[in-house]
Length: 227
Image (cartoon, rainbow, N blue to C red; front, side):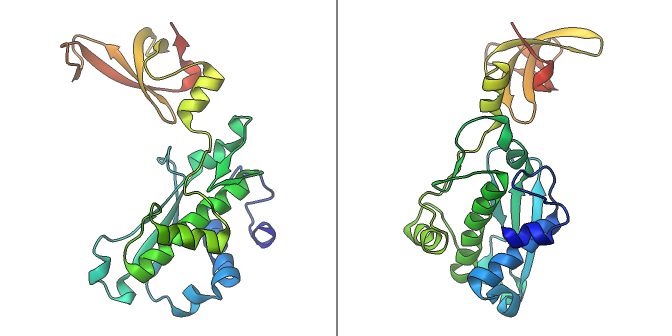
């Protein structure tokens, strides 16, 4: 953590307001040196990528890899360690404990590190055994022995919870909003970064089991009024 804050031109403290792929690469290099004795730098011949996702609204992290790992040579291995910026930037939106992998975090940087550690365990399992599951004993032992993780899940603020606490909105609520100079009434059917609102419309492209047709709108939470 200390070295990351010293070396990153984007991170200035525990509260993350901006982050770049280069920060994830730097974080990986620090973990590789401190925890793995530069194993990946000196011995890994495949490709490692690091990416930030604005579409991941439930998963804090993900390791993306080819499904035919067993058939690939070491040089053909390819892993993408992907982190959700949505959950990182939502960290401060709720005043409650935020637990990641069984550990209470003090800020969004610590949450990032714990999520990243979880993905490192997936990387190690995939590299060594060509399969990985955080529900299995091998992964859980690895995560505990390396990083002290006692769980394999996070309790970071998700958008449905934020919508309920901050705006009093939940899936199934009837709401109204203004768009295109009109007032629309509809029902919230999903909440991610925005609310998905289904508005009854005889010419809509969506139809429920009762035959009612709807148009779909993606609406910022702040624009919705509960009816």
